Amino acid sequence: MRKKRVLLFSEGFGTGHTGAAYALAEGIKLLNPDVQCRVIELGKFLNPTVAPWILSAYRKTVSSQPKLVGMMYKTQYDKSLNRLTKLALHRIFYTHASQVIEQLKPDLIICTHPIPGAVISRLKRRGLNVPLYTLITDYDAHGSWVNSEVNGYLVSTPRVKSILTGRGIDPELVTVTGIPVHPKFWERSNKTVLRKELGLSDIPTVLIMGGGWGLMFGKKIMNSLTARMGEIQLIFCMGSNDKLVAKMRANPLLQHPNVKILGYSSEINKLMDASDLLITKPGGMTCTEGQAKGIPMLFYKAIPGQEEKNCQYFVELGLAEVLDSTVVNKWFSLLLREYAALEEQRRRRLAPDRHQPSNCATTVLEILGNTVDRAREAQGSRAQARNEEPVYLTP
Image (cartoon, rainbow, N blue to C red; front, side, top):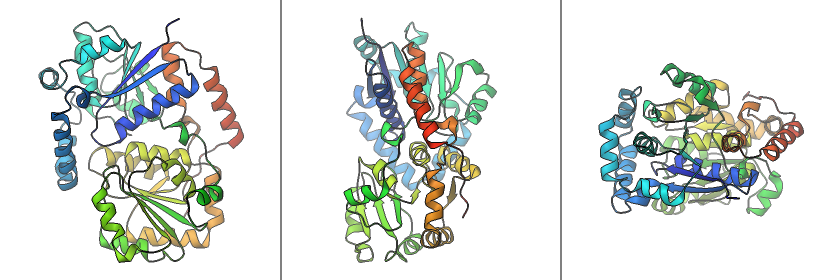
């Protein structure tokens, strides 16, 4: 019997969209190894010469003109990509998209970025007969995610579902699954053991993530972070920005035994488990990974648009705060004075039941008609073992 195939299309605008696709693929594989998954950044795959140039331009715009990015997000907030735009995208980048689909013969296509979603929707309108689902990878729903040819939407929260239904989408087509995270984030590991494995001191530890591109904050915040590095361990994880990593390692202020400076890491799950506080940009994937690990979060430099909405969601739930020097000082004092109480909060978990990290993979298996008994059994045993309930930040 032929194995079911899931084709996941993304784009490299930021790291979260593709990260969500790979996380979902790994979750499906864990729960049912008989399902085959393939993740492709479609524009880069079909046009490897031009696509990197466009991504580089986007990265520079986000870094140097975030207000412009926010303005574009807000002015187009309720608008889907029109047919002319879809046609232009197809002609310039995605001419051979239908050939890729024909060759791979998927039973289900899932898009984790609006652009491939729009392109595949156009192909469906022209006769493609493969179910198409859209996985929204933030805690908001920009109009560009919406296409009439989509068979279903997988979304992060009931609020995102209400935004979509408010735009006329049938509620039956929208499933609240949470944003998928890699199975490495489904469980927690022993903090003391991990610190030893990673070569870290067994003291209060703060993980500072600069985003996938290594974006960083200013001098005032940096001074607040380093003021107590004799008592609090700092792990800087700066993504793929090698120049920034080299600059930070050369900075005399950061040359301290309790300071670790990393570039890209494939062990973020371990670093989160080894840490007591996460300082990060509010990207959808990182927020969800932090929530799955139950780590308190402080957010900085939200890009106007979806990151602002992500930030708003977690702050309103009491799972995070917005970073400034006063907030840093408060939390560092808590880590030193009330460490045991904060760790007990974390043991009880921050994530509500509806955000079980395996939900999205389980839902996709249900869509395929494959058995999900293993998924339900694993999910149920984890929830029972944790006696899980929401726990909010109480500094």
